[in-house]
Amino acid sequence: MTTAKSNHIGRKISRIRELRDMKQDALAQALGTTQQAISIMENSETIEEEKLIEVAKALGVSTEAIKNFSEEGVINYFNSFTDNKGPIYTGHHCTFNPLDKLVEAYEENRKLYERLLEAERKR
Image (cartoon, rainbow, N blue to C red; front, side):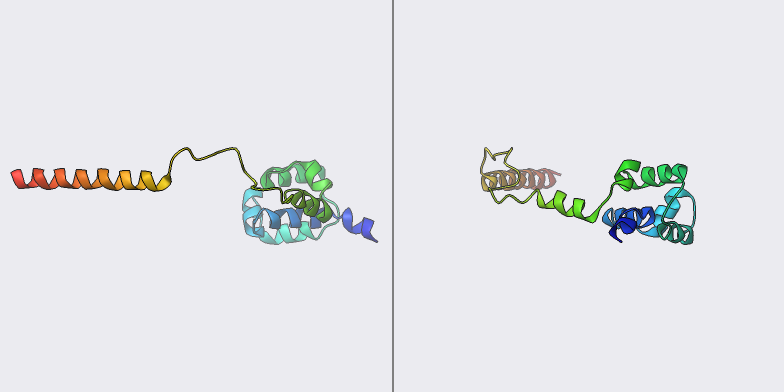
């Protein structure tokens, strides 16, 4: 019973579309069709290869990604990011104190304002 569900191309397209935060209307517009046609397609177990290529392009994925899509794969993919070993991104270390930069910017702004006032007074 699970094999029939896992081969349902329309459901896979629907799920990938949802994961990409795309509405049926947006996919329909990208394919030059109607929302109703997308709904019918997503309820279809099989889709012609040419149409699948168009859908994959509109979704920004490969046809293989659609054919091989599985919820378990998505869950495993995202679970691979949580290793609890520390910060996720450690490639950049700040070499200055951000508050010092803020104070510098404030002082520069104050000096510019004073010069503007002086220039207005001279007029």
